[in-house]
Length: 435
Image 1 (tube, helix red, strand yellow):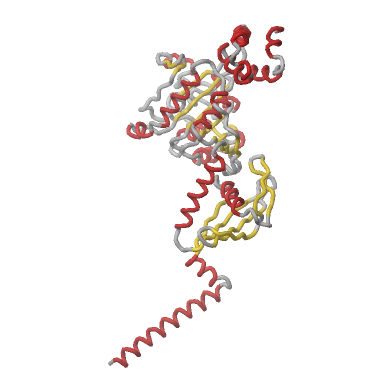
Image 2: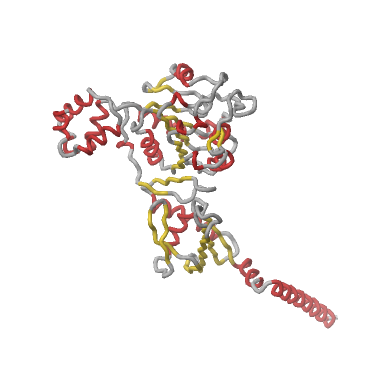
């Protein structure tokens, strides 16, 4: 009996070995690399970042920091800055064990497109534990390396691409008529803390802001300072650089939850300007009259209508003729801003020199909830700017009185006063006497 059982076990083991050998023979016969691929799939995990990934540059900086002694290097242009990074090929480093990095770069199909690049990271281990640790580590690296800078993304041929990093503009260096800065700060703080409030009432957690005023009044500067203050990246949207509605909807849908979407000079794009024969939309002036009942620091506040159904803007029944800009329509723009794919938690900021030109559908309640007119600086605001430019005179009562009197006889934007102080740094008070 024992002999028979041992014989059966031997037969079973032999059959298993034969089958296993046949499998490997078949595997190797199909491809010389099949055995290697099989082993890699069992003991290694790979992670790939393509050049369209918003984390691609961050991964490159992390790798460059870890591979400081690499002899295979190249120079890359990231957001207008020259950086020395690892070159093409395979690099080895230690990250909780051996790790391999394969950097590839190849020409795009057209001469004007940027090269197609990728980092493929190979970790020793079949589970995803090291991958998850790596993703955590690069986010920590982001905070350490870029804690005091603002990320600015621009849409480039199908992706947000590499961010540019800029020094943050401090809010105390943004000069505006009294009360307006505090108003916008209070409104955005309230929005950021109110996700649960929006969710409980079935309202998409998004907010739209419209800043308008003459050129040089500080609209874009304010947007940049707000993004820096709330530690949010800026996604700068140039409608002329996006080919069609689908790409625009994809672009705004790829914005991070904490992002600030910035559309500067929106009145410069014909799709955003007024359509003819629209009698179903209130004009901006009419909405202002409705909103004038509610004021904060003298600034009208628009209230979103929670029950407002989406208009059929841009449909064949609309009386307005279709408007396009490089394949983008007004309907596409509106859907991108607050359609079903629009990111929640984001802040949209649009700027314009002339609000009367904008299509009422674009700035209606619910799309634009915070409206701010930024005009010339008042005398007190000019004095605040003067104190920053000339700190040695900030306690000089006579000088400050002189500046306030000089500013009171003039009506200029923040950029005009900034240029005045720069041009006459050496003799600013004398210039005020002569003017």
